[in-house]
Image 1 (cartoon, one colour):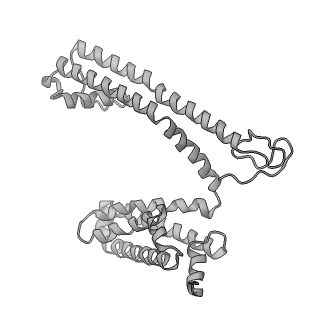
Image 2 (cartoon, one colour):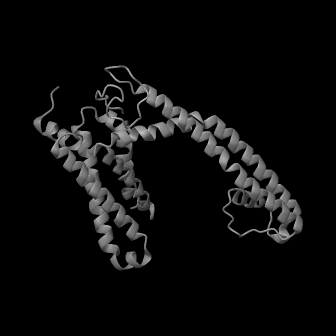
Image 3 (cartoon, helix red, strand yellow):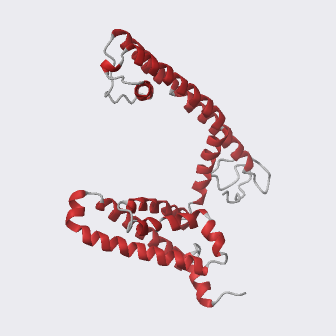
Length: 272
């Protein structure tokens, strides 16, 4: 069944990124999203909330109604409403308005509206920055390929912090703040990650020695996950360059942001 002219026009504006109307709509939407986030952030400041609570409420209510209407229009003009509703952006668009209605029954739920900021990802489509998404995909694939190595590393660190935490519980004990093994493991995690809050510190000589070993170990293992991810990233970038092949001379090995072949100068196909 063919769509009505109204639905076709709305589709071109709301979902279109090539038309002027679609670009203006997306830019206006992004401005509205950022504005609503600013209002949400300001409402969390006690002094501002006390003075302008009513104004902030009505502004936020206006944004919520605006985004609700926009979501309903997307469902109305989409060729496959159910497919849109199940898509990544469809789910985010829905989640971006639901907390505002939950807030009528659960105070504070409106702060979950910060998820609206994810909708700003549409700026990649609006400003034709899709090629930058390719670079982020390379990073995500590298992390996926390294997940087993990272899991082994994480398991090893978990064992180490448990051992060091238990040692500190035995050495220092409740008298020095190490009231339990979980509390001592918390200290070990904070120390081995080189954060060092200072809320728990050893007092005995042996405890300070163990703490020194823990801190030195923390600095030593920092390079391990970095090396794992870097190796996978280099491999993934090498594979990506091999995939960018010139349609004219079949030369591969181009950089991911190359526009022309390094051998014959032929324009390379757009990589997504």
